[in-house]
Structures are given as C-alpha cells and as structure tokens.
Image (cartoon, rainbow, N blue to C red; front, top):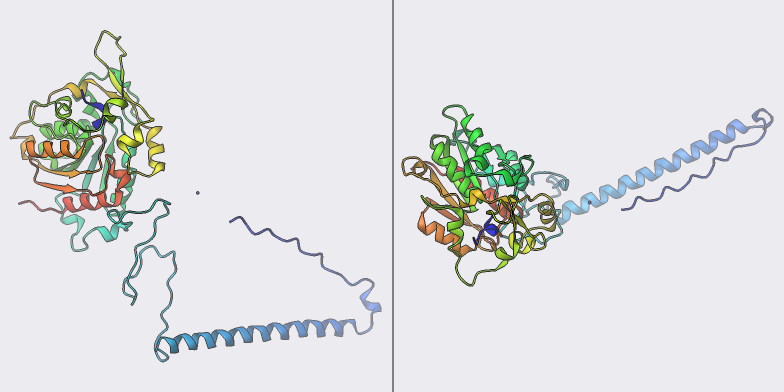
Length: 386
C-alpha cells in the first residue's frame, strides 16, 4: 500500500525376472529325484545361514571397534537419531544444529529456520497471557493470503489466529471500485470485533495500509484490543489521512511508487480515481525485493486493486479510545514502498510503546523474514502490562 500514495530420483527400473526353469517329465520316472531336491534345498539353507552368521560377526566387530574408538567399551552406544525427527534433541555431546530449509534460497542469519517450540519462551504459558488471539490485517491490494506463513507458525505455537479479508480484498467478492469510505473498507474487521464476547481481547496486527485500518478499529473497540502492532504500516495521527502521510516522503527516495501506480477511473476520467492497480512488472522491486520467488509469484496472481477513497479519508483518533491501546512498531529497513525514513517519521510523530527493527526485511516481512517476524509477534504478546 505504501506504493499507492505519492498522492517439487528417478525410480530404479525394475528388471524383469527370468522365468523359473521347471524340470520336464514325470517325477515318478526319475529315480531318487526327491532326495536330489532335498539336498539342493539343504545346501541353499546352509549357505544362507552361513551368510547371516558372517554378516552378524562383521556387525559385531564394527560395533566393538566403534565403542573402543569412543572410549566407551563398557558404556552405551550413542544411537544416531533419525533425520526425520521433527524436534532435534539438544542433549547430545555435539552442538545442536538448526534444521535445514527446503528452499534453494540461502537463508539469512537474521531469519533462522526454527521450530515454533524454539521460538516461544517455555517459561511463559499461553494461558497466562492477557490474550493469545492474533487478528491479522493485510495492506492495500493484499489479502488474508499474504499471512499464510505467519498463520501456520502462530497456530503451531498454540496461538489463535484470525486473518481477515477487507472489503474488495482477497476472496471478498465486492468490487473495489464501489468502495467509497474507510468504514466500508474496514467493515469485515469491525464486524468481527463487534461480535467478540464481552471481555475477549485481541492483538491487532496491521501491515501497510492495514495500519490505518486497525487504527480506525482501535478507536471503535479499544476495550477489545490488548495490543496493536504496526508492521511497515501507516501509523497516523488524529486528522491525518494515509495520503497525507505519504506526501511526507522525503526527496531522493525511490520513484518506484509512482512508476507502479495505475489509476482506475470507473466513474469516468472527469471524476476522481476509484482504485489503484499495481504494475506487476515492478512488484518484485517495490514490495518483494528480499522475498522468495514463489511468494512473488503468489502475490502477482493474488493482488487486487486498492480502493482510492479510503486513502483520502482523514482519521478521527482520540486519546480516550485509540490512545488507551498499547502500540508497537516493527520497522523494515529494506523497504522500497514505505522507506525506513518515512517509518521513522511516523514513529517520531506518534511514539509507540516500543519499536523493533526486522533486519533484512523488505516491505513484506511475512514473506522475506517469516521466522523473525513470528518471533517478534510472540515476544510482543508476552510483554506484560506496566
């Protein structure tokens, strides 16, 4: 959304078995045939038993040698665990190593492939948290689909996760050109919060334009929001629109934003734009410059137009409602859509409780740094009330 405003061995071939040779003639006419077959079967069985005995002897010798080499002839033999073990045992003498990724892309040290149980502090029980329910809100043009890695990681860690499709986004069937207000765009989120039971709280996570959307919801339902996390998101002040915020883009920053914008005039060229399309040839450089190719491919066939009217709408945020919700910001320093300078400008204008920096992350950290992002979300969920 930041881009929308400057305004899977080959199988070994099976050899055909040679047909079994059969003796011709009537067995009754062959003298001593029964004795001959008995001798043949006996010889084969003896050879087979001999082979097994030799193999067992060889295995015992190797076993003994291994014990002596490890200085533990009278001790137990350290059994090599299966490589399919899901959670490596760190109690061995060797240093535990991280499981390898199936991706061909080199994994950054800033986004190690860790299992969810390694990310969550075992001393903290989810039941002890104020809430373990994350509500994920996508940015402009995106949909709930963009959170698929984050959803899987959080759920495997025991958290409850809800990812919403805002109006005209993801699989929501509404025509983007027909969206005329921020309240209409955010309605799936506000309807969800409205239906929550009294006393039930959530952690709102907003990405990109989703930052303005969760701010709108925080003003309406402050008692249902425990924490708000802005991820490379628009964090506005009272009376400010998303367009106002992006107009602060500093000179010298990338022109990719302007190049990617394709305005849609569904009501005619003489009327304001109704939506903004994104030039898919620029998507990688603008939004996914550090992300895996498979995720870029997913986005290129899933991104939808961004409604224009909600971008123009100024927010009404009060200290008594919006101001009572604890806010946290996650910076993305390799971001070409909302540059780090603009992120810091928003942070300085309305300081959150704490700021985190996701090293090496582009504008879409749920693709480029999913493990590191997950770790920060869990960390923030555990921050106690002051």
